[in-house]
Image 1 (spheres, rainbow, N blue to C red):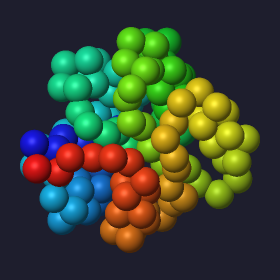
Image 2 (cartoon, rainbow, N blue to C red; image 1 turned 90 degrees about the vertical axis):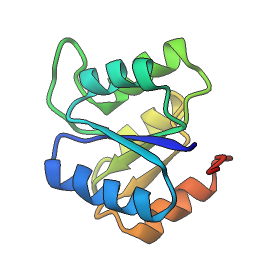
Image 3 (cartoon, helix red, strand yellow; image 1 turned 120 degrees about the vertical axis):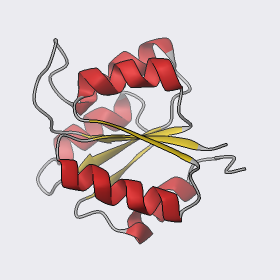
Image 4 (cartoon, helix red, strand yellow; image 1 turned 180 degrees about the vertical axis):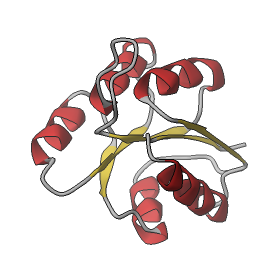
Length: 126
């Protein structure tokens, strides 16, 4: 059963991605409102894929999505994490990819952009 974890500090963004993920066939959809919560939920839930906003407020030493990416991949190097980014964050995207992100989606996110990013991963949606 495919699981996705959506990590974003904007509630409306989490809601939108949840809706798209359900339409794309994810059976279990979870969310977190900051990187620290995302790391903890990843450890607990072990989702098949994570969407992670690059820019989020600091909490408990996790300053942004890249810190959360690094923290997750330290214990789970196989983690499939797709970064969400806005225009003007190219440097952070390159940094995230170099630290193990499997891809990125440029905001505003659409169903098609999410589908395209996920299609590059080998997910078992059954």
